[in-house]
Image (cartoon, rainbow over all chains, first blue to last red; front, side):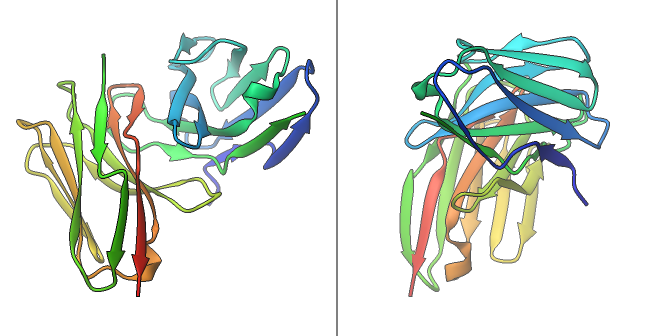
Length: 113
Length: 108
């Protein structure tokens, strides 16, 4: 019954490394999202995508990029990881226009040392 | 600016008591969702509210939507410890806009 899968549950990376967080959904949803969640700051939108090869900046895109080459996969890229990117990252997908709820992945807890 | 304001931020309540969490949103889109998050876990969908006057109930939780007031409520009836979690209202305007979350603790 898996719907949204994130590639790693826990990840430890070094400062300056390029980091890839992968998210795959099996519901044929058009919309996909990446959020980060930090204590006291709630969930903040990094990037989202309405369709293959489309991307839109969210509220905090600096230091991140994304890739959506296939409908089911949405990747978040940290070009040069920094310690302030230590966080919980959540991927979500939702259908376009129907109002049906979004489904979330299990989250990736990233620590940058 | 699109906003979703949720209150209270923190709620400590005794088992058996009732309480309501409020969620105000600032746009005209009327898709409102409630999610639950347990510590260290992801978000689980609770309710989808799509029209004015929508009311949905599951167990001890009931959610409602008033689109004219741009207000949704999550009512907890006779709280039990298992309801301890963080609850988010989320407004769907094609982007998902999250409320701040309400951390609920239910004690004996």
